[in-house]
Amino acid sequence: MWRNIASNALSFLVVLVFLFGGALIWAQSEYDTAGPLDQPICLQVERGSNFRRVSDELVSQNAVSSGMLFRLGADYADKTSELKAGSFLVPEGASMSEIVEIVTRGGASTCGTEVVYRVGITNASVQVRELDPTTGRFEEIADFDPGADEAPAEYTAVRERADTRYRVALAEGVTSWQVIEELKQVDALEGDLEEIPAEGTLAPDSYEIQPGDTIASLVERMQRAQDLILTQAWQDRAPGLPLESPEEALILASIVEKETGIPSEREQVASVFINRLNEGMRLQTDPTVIYGITNGEGVLGRGLRQSELRAATPYNTYVIPGLPPTPIANPGRASIEAALNPDDAEYLFFVARTLDPSDGHVFAETLDEHNANVAAYRRLEAERANQ
Image 1 (cartoon, rainbow, N blue to C red):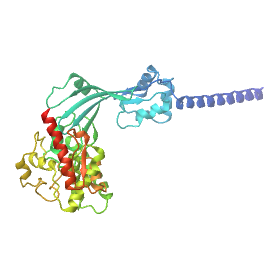
Image 2: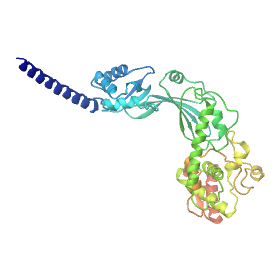
Image 3: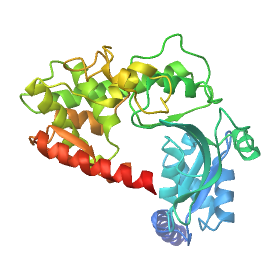
Image 4: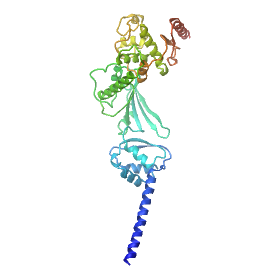
């Protein structure tokens, strides 16, 4: 009898083992297979939340088939303690394992509401926008000038939310004075700077920030980024350039940045200035003269006077030979690379193609060609004046 009992117990145990193994295989398959979500969602994980709350939210949005299995899988993967707060884009059909990875890997939030503080050449703005997970596009909620406008209610509301993301975006060609003046208007940043950073040393880019970050810490990030860009570009520079140091390359890059906003023209514009330096010709560029007048503090807002073009100042490249003493703006990566790898062309001159700056420039190798191009431009000016 005992032998029969033992045999039946062993058989039952074997069945249990097989059932348990089958359950594990099924659970693993469910955990890794595509989920029921039929369109992307933005999952918000509040600070201090836990996997039970997250799983309940996912079940309510039909993103997972089982909250318990989602939690067990996260626990088995030893991810339970790694839950991050933020707003996360969960794609259509995401598996439980993929969602666990999304909410535990850290880094910046991938959706939700963000505030972008834009520092532009002629103005600054604050933009509040929200990602529509179904289209993958940001929808603007509010846009205002922090120096002139009262902050709208939409901005105040998102500033009070813990999951709001913040970025500072620097346009290519802004001056260091402009950057610092506008950063003072960013209420998500704290502190101040005693001195304006050296011109050209701040990398135009988009920087993720957190409320309470200091202006000084953000500026250090910008300086480190620009130093890395310049160092790499200098190492990869074309041979035989009339530039003796990375600092001179930065000066030339800033001139290229201010002379054209057309990405495809940067190497051509750089070739003109490189050729002029090689020929011992003056650079004769208006942006350097303007910087000598404004010191980078705002926009001149008028045309240059003949007296200013004749004045012997360190930045008047119509008078001085070679490069000015410092950069005249903060150039972006593309202009730095263009200055150090210009087109292999023999251009010595360029002038605006039309009265629309977006149409770019026309280039010339000889003075006669350039004079003809200038004459064509003057005719366009005359036609506009007679309209």
